[in-house]
Amino acid sequence: MQPTSKKTVMKMRDAYERTIRKSSTENLRKKFPDRPWIEEVSSIWVSRKELEALLNANNADGLRIYYGCHHERTHNNPKLDYHGLHNIIFVATKDSVDAQNPTTQTSVDQLRDIGVMEGSGVEPTSYEGSAGEVATLCPPSCPPPPPQG
Image 1 (cartoon, one colour):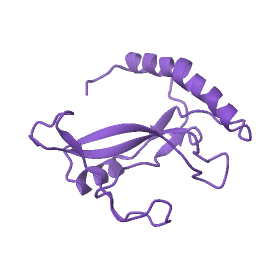
Image 2 (cartoon, one colour):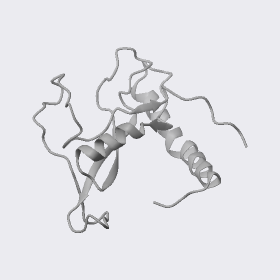
Image 3 (cartoon, one colour):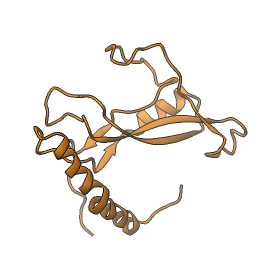
Image 4 (spheres, helix red, strand yellow):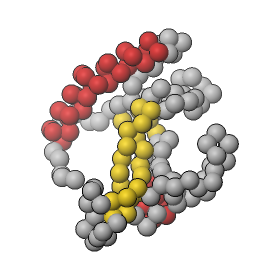
C-alpha cells in the first residue's frame, strides 16, 4: 500500500462515480423496479476496533479485501436493505512462508467452515476463521459531505 494524496483520491472517486457506480445504479434500478431510490454503494465504513478484532482473532499478518454483492435481503425496511448492493469482504491472511515479510503471493486466507450454517440465524461469536462483512454502506447510511478545499 502506498500513501496517496487527496487530489489523487478525489480523481479516483470521480472516475468510479462516472463509470462503475453510474452504470451499476442504472442496472440496480432495472433489477429492483420496486426500489426506485436504490443507488450503488459509494463508500463503506468499518471501525478500527472491528478490523483489529478480525486480525487478532486470526493471528493475521495481512488483510485481503474481496468485492462482493449482497445476495439476499438484509433489512426489513426496503430503504435500508443492502440486497443487490456491492460490498467488500475483509479476510484475514497469514503468510505461509515468512510472517515477517508477508506477500500477496504467499498469504493464505484464514477462512474455514466454522460450523454455523448460513441462514441459520446463528452468528459466529468471534472473527476466528470467518470474514468481516456487513459494514456500513453509503448509501443508504452516508456521513455528511466532506468539507471543500
